[in-house]
Image (cartoon, rainbow, N blue to C red; front, side, top):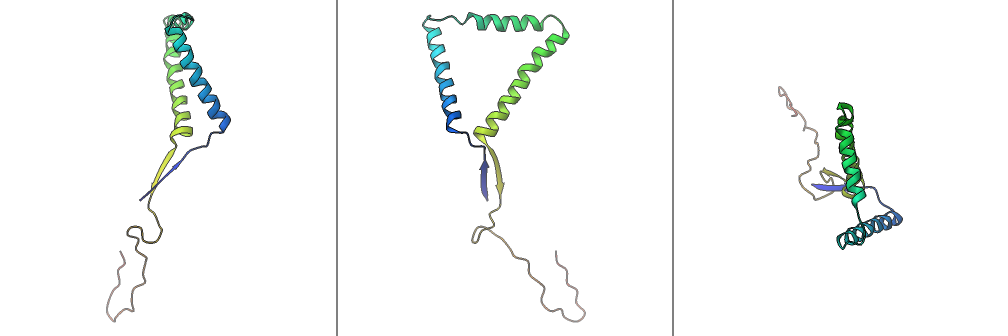
Length: 117
């Protein structure tokens, strides 16, 4: 049995952008940890988003659905570009596994019946 993985290729520029974003994220976390910058605006934004969600049933639904849709989109991107789609199949090459070839029945005898199953 063979396994084939298909995924879309990312350009070198896209990989460079990904590494730059990871380095920037690590830099921001380290600078916040040592107290050089404040990330209070992120906490205020999350608090405001949750307060918006408590205003009514429609806003609460939006607060529930938006992160869910964002997770679906993130999973699609990771699955398509990084993990790939795996297809398992039988190798039809010579010498690999059991691969019988169909055969025609031999000449029939008188008063006999041929059944191919």
